[in-house]
Amino acid sequence: MKVGVLALQGDFREHLYALSECGVEASAVKTFDEISQIDALILPGGESTTIAKLARTFGLTDLIVERIRGGMPTYGSCAGMILLADRIEDAAAGQETFGGLDMTVRRNAFGRQVDSFESDLLVAGITAPPIRAIFIRAPWVESVGPGVEVLASVEFNGECHPVAVRQGNLLATSFHPEITGDNRVHRFFVENICKVHVA
Image (cartoon, rainbow, N blue to C red; front, top):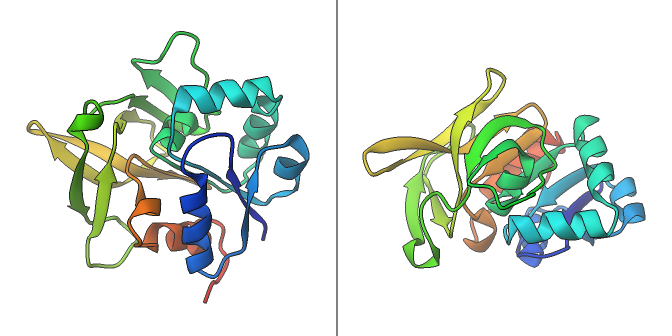
């Protein structure tokens, strides 16, 4: 299986390293031909508006949408979660997503960069101990459709908000497992969604 990490902007290198630590050969992808040839895709953290604009500028948006709708396994972290959402609260003017996940996300829901935080999370489908989740200007999930499974939630100001979800071949987290050295989310994506056994 060929796994690509969208390399238009953001921390794609960290995802490539996490995948290599799992024994998966992955490549940075940023052209029409490269994205046409992969079997699975990771959308990295970064600036969701910038990634969306660059994808549109380089003629990639329709291809990525088509591949996701066609069932390509796709994982998005932080900005990647926003890009996989069908609906956005507090969207920038004209902001596009690739969509696919029947959910509404809120951009920068936990606050600004200075409000970044860490939390220990139990994620359904991933064995204990809890994952140390890092939230940086992160979104949260406002609502999900009936086909979306909530894998983890965080309590914030007395309310619980989903921060990891799955719908079929799509996985999204509002936190950044790619920068922690804990590769269990990537392994979960590869083994359970891409259904590839890794060493």
